[in-house]
Length: 112
Length: 114
Image (cartoon, rainbow over all chains, first blue to last red; front, side, top):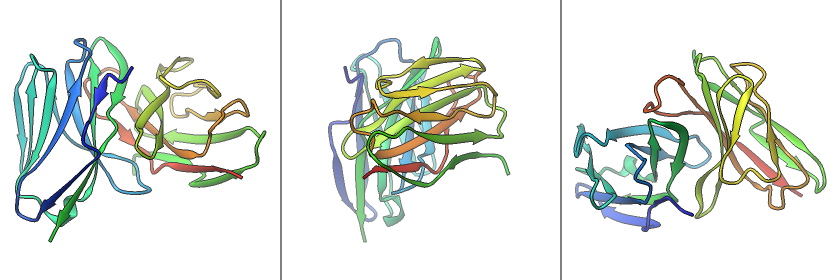
């Protein structure tokens, strides 16, 4: 049972344009969500998070939007840069338990 | 510097052998996690531990075992019962008290079964 899904395996974007990565979840117990960025042969690094009491969180070029009724979140990167090319993972958890579930990841490629 | 250290970085194993992957953290974190990454599968949770001497199975625990005898250490043993052990293994930790906190990851260990 895949509780966190990233349905787009890959995304290709031109430098300077917006990148939108999507994530859907099924467990209504999830009340906080995180995005991680991963380069090959390295561990993921934390990018941005949002709790269920908010519908938007912004950090520089990165913005995460949460739609609780649709159980959907998205990561917007504006403007996209070639250095943003990596695998992006959506991560969901609940403050009532310690298990953390990841989506399958989306490979973002930003072309110069 | 504080962080998570995984070793070895690369490991080769013959079929039928058990191997143990090391994970050590000096961040004073209570919670530790083991994930496995396969192409197209994302990060799948093997085991996690929220406190010393306690751990829970994740989504794909079969063929794996762990121990948490010390706060800073969470070794993972890949047993011969694991049918497809070739993968990239990631250890992570976070402060246990804050269940909304981010995970801190190690650099990973790549296991190849020959």
